[in-house]
Image: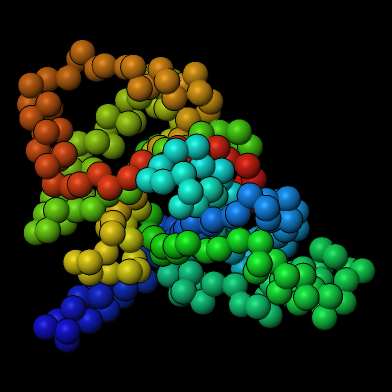
Length: 263
């Protein structure tokens, strides 16, 4: 049984390699900060924003976002989400090493010596707790030119495909729900939509198997989208939507504001 599972994971990974040029790979980090450490953490975040910009300039990563949460599973569980973008799965799994971070930190802070940078990183560990990390692959997205700038809103919807309906769920997202989101974008009710598949952890005990990123330029667009009802949908389309909803369990929805975007 274990051998079959390992072969399945290997097959998915090799398949990911073959389409790496057409996809993005994202690492989500869910961060918890105690109220007494908030000031020091924000200072560290501003410092790291410059470090990640240096990594982007060196083509080590494709981008980095920092989001503050407004709602979700438990407001005390974590308050921030950081997303690092990669162009292929190997880069995602290798990520940024301590040596990389020190190098890029010294590039953007030429007055700092190596031991000072390492000390800053060491002290920063006490300002926050990495509550959870998720490795994900983008598998579908809408056609749009959404501008990722500070202040935009996102709804991060964590999904778990019903056991035995993994392929049915992905098919429903791509063939049923994505056209609905595309229509909303064209009506000015949404900015962007992306479907991600969880790469790690993988297995029946995973809390979620997929995540959708729903982007809005501001609260006006967000609430207009929530109130919108598509009166033009056919009975056949409504049946397809209902069937698609039964193929997954929506675990949690996190509403967040973009604080920083490095590209």
